[in-house]
Length: 274
Image 1 (cartoon, one colour):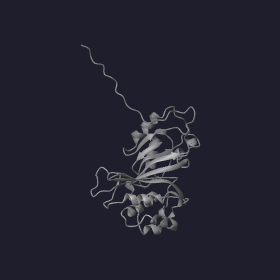
Image 2 (spheres, one colour):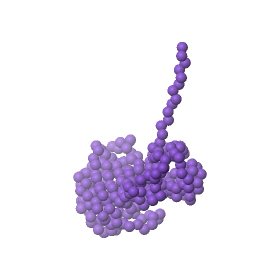
Image 3 (cartoon, one colour):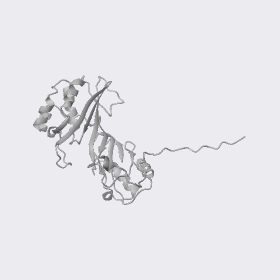
Image 4 (tube, helix red, strand yellow):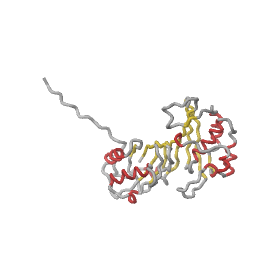
């Protein structure tokens, strides 16, 4: 499933999350219990982070002849700010999290004295004039394999993870008053992207030089980053795409077609003849 949403993903009993709401809808549609669905998301986005390209998988003990009906039923049950964009059958070896080869995040910054009200829910407002060239220079230091221990926040809900991640690209794109930071990597630690963005904001304000990045990376110490920057706000961040091992996303033979949703049609009225 490819999903669009504006809340955090991970299941919590205390407050509604995407996983919780999606599971509730799946339980009603499939008539299965939560423990039998085994719903897994590709990325554990936290509260306030948006997603255009979240991917999840679930398991059923039966096959569907068509996926259009379950697709329509799920979107009919979900709140209006959550939408399943696509449902596809999957091979047994596919796993929404472990089959991932890379993830792409975008962070939007609105850099003007007055915030565009139409951007306020999806972009961070920086009233400080930013230097995109300095931010580009700094972003290049993140590219490659590094230990990102200095850029991870502690989380009670995450198991110990390998702090070494491979950043494939980190682009700073100017679009008028908008600065779009696009980062693609093999994976990301808890709040890693928001912490990298926070440091780039300080560099863009010319408060610190671009070459501070490798110095902080070398310390492997989160306290070192805290001397210069706090995490950037969540609402500017969006999970745009998840890329997968090509062998794992090949559709099984004889499976139903992928559903992208269906259009409704109106039957033509028969006009009376005179």
